[in-house]
Amino acid sequence: MAAELTLGPNLFHWPAEMKLDFYNRIADESPVSTVYLGEVICSKRTPFFDDHHLDKVADRLERAGKKVVFCSFSEVVIKRERNLLREWAEQEGRDLEVNNTAALLYLKNKPHRIGALLNVYNEDTMAYLHEQGATHFALLPELPRAAVAKLGEKAAELGVGLEVQVFGRASLALSARCYHARAHARTKDNCQFVCGEDLDGMTLKTMDEKPFLTVNGIQTLSYGYLDLMPDIEDLKSIGVTHYRVMPHTCDMIAVTRLFDDVLQGRMAPAEGDAKLRELGIEAPFVNGFYHGRSGHTWSDRAAAELA
Image (cartoon, rainbow, N blue to C red; front, side):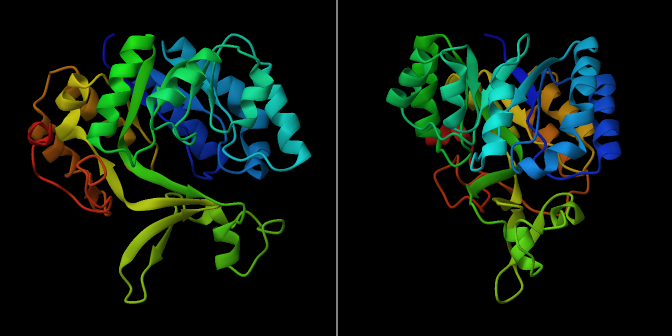
């Protein structure tokens, strides 16, 4: 299976016009082969974009030769969300990515993908979900190399795709509470969509004012940007077939081109990583999880040394 570059779902609450412009540029200028679409964090955001623009954006991307995958919510709590999930599962003609086990009830063995927000970190879980119709697995970013390698062996045995996030803030936790609303002395029901004020998430600092985590509604993300570009050749060797970059407000066209150049062997990983660091991203780059260290750290050791 050839290595492919993918664009994960946009986790943040961007204005509709900003999203439209973003995906039009992805269609015209980015080398990604697959684009994941849909609101996965907060169902209250869906009327701003998904209800009016999602199909138009999907059609535009497909005309540009991209594969489009529709993503489910990460949390399903109220009746309205269950109804929206049922409608999502009934769609035909496009792949669906599951981010909550509630979606499996409505899919009824229909072929689907497993998203990174539905934690799969052992072979038995992968095999069971494959029996239920899963054809592709995106792994959670906290997994160390040894676990990715084991799942790579199982994915090859089952004949399914295996996807790993290689760029962007990493999702660490989800909660029923909205951290963004609470930080502004608002309730979840009366949040006034304050998450839209932080286009890459709201920085959470320690008591001594050091950036530590990032808040995005009900979601906690890393502060640093995951960067596994130096590990791409190692990831290929352990069975990873798809490489996911996550949308941010930085120059995502440049980001995806650099990753694709390295992925396809047109550029050395060291050169690509040096150019990635010239794009002006203010947060630090991290890769600790993959290297068996604290996730907020960076390791310069070659991945091969960890084998």
